[in-house]
Image (cartoon, rainbow, N blue to C red; front, side):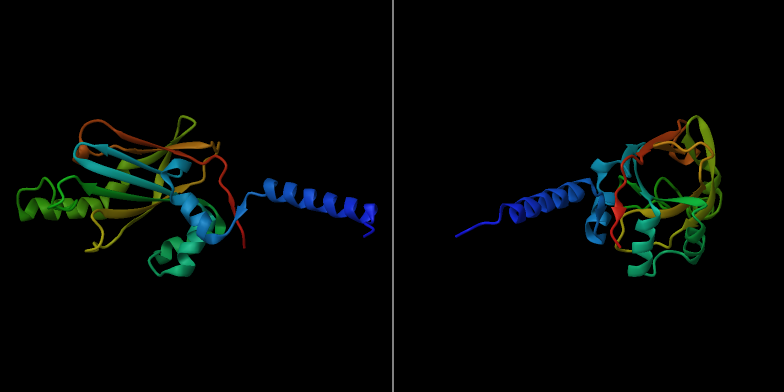
Length: 200
C-alpha cells in the first residue's frame, strides 16, 4: 500500500492545530459553565461561618444570570431589566442560622415584636449595611431584593446589585457591617480571575 506523505503531513498538521486551538479555548457549555461558577474552588462562590450564622455568597457573571433567567422564573424582574446594560454586577447572598430549628428571621428573637422588627430590617434596611470593597474603594449596594421564604431552603436569600467599579480588580470583598451579626464586619473575598466564556 502506497501512502502519500504530503497528505499525511497535512493531516497531521491539521490535527495538531485543532488540538492547540482546543487547548487554548476557554469556552465551555452551559452545564459545565454553571458548575464552574458554583464551585467553591474557583473563587466566585465563597462561604464563611461567623457568630452562629453561615454566609454564602455567589458572584453571578452576566452569562450565568442569562442561564438562570432562561431556565427559571426565580430571577426578579428588576434584575432581568438591569442585566442588559452591564452597568451592575450581581451577587446572591444566603444567610442561615446554625440553629437548624430557627430560620434567619426567628433566630435570636424573643417575641413577635422583635421578629417584626427583624423582618422589616432584612426587607429594607439591611441593604445599607452591605458594600463591596475593591482596590480600597467602597462600592455601595444599589439593587436589593429579599426573596420570599421557601420551605426547601435552610436560609434566607438576598439578591444584590453593585455598580461596576471605576477601578475594577480581580478580587472583590463583600462586607457586611450589621449589628445583627455582631460588632465586627464580616468580609468574604470573591476572586473573578480566569472566568471561562460560555459556549453559545
